[in-house]
Length: 127
Image 1 (cartoon, one colour):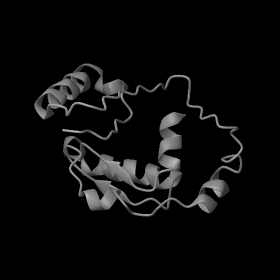
Image 2 (tube, helix red, strand yellow):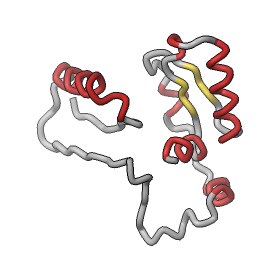
Image 3 (cartoon, rainbow, N blue to C red):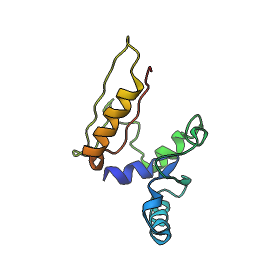
Image 4 (cartoon, helix red, strand yellow):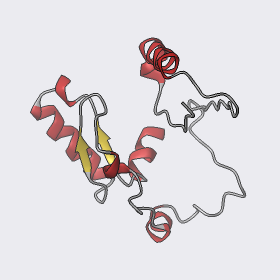
């Protein structure tokens, strides 16, 4: 299960949309997350608002810990496989700065129409 793998290997866990559920549900979810990955701290947030310092440049990757969890981690022969229901898309524009408002509209529209199907989004933008 791709979602369980993401939690198991996470260095930090953001528990988002916490304003939409009860405290009882949050505690139940946090307990489940800790049962999958007891080492990763969990940060509750709303609208994905979290300090960049909490997730960036934290030096958290520990190869020894990863190999303990998955002894075959380094034996992939350059292949990375996901659950067959997961795919990825990459977009590249190297020369022209992007229009922030257009990017926000595009991402907002995509999340409204396909948000339930998106595990994560990441990128480096030249704005």
